Image (tube, rainbow, N blue to C red):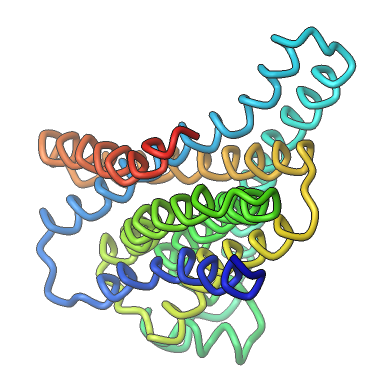
Length: 280
């Protein structure tokens, strides 16, 4: 398989995230449906948290099993550091945004649908609705995770394992198709109708890193770099999951929310089984 073919397929694997994004523009959604979409997004992200933590821990455990103490210490240190950065950076970002909102002297110019235009005109993140900010955080966390997936695709192709690379691409493409729903959960939950431009930006943030990871992994690979990116993704996804659970509690539909969180987790595992079938 040529490098060009690998990169094209890597782009396809990340591009399927756009399939779920139009859900964010649904109107006249009932409160129960909003709760369900938010809960489904939460379940998908819970699975992603497990998935990326597994990706970060596997090389560390491998070094431990091999009794390579120096490599184990190094990988464990960068893993912990990456996880802390991914989690705490978003915590501090959230506090910073709250402080900015409290100091804001002028109200927003338009409704939620105009938030992207306001952001461009004013150059300030506080012009976005709370749902859009949470959607942005989800897209960033998914993007870091998808960068790690791209590294796996590129590395498999670089080592000559073409069939494995194709299997990874198919599996990640199916898996990423569900991630668009995860990004749109907060938007549907607050009843905000985002612009197509905003959704396209979220798709590029969440899915674009798959292509970039494929490009880098095909040219150069590093075990420590893989651990760092997976750990950062895990930390950021943990923060977002915590925020979504708080949102879900406000809906009050406990039984519905719990069932759909479970469904989201099952969907995540179901799409991951294609990759697991390759024997990775």
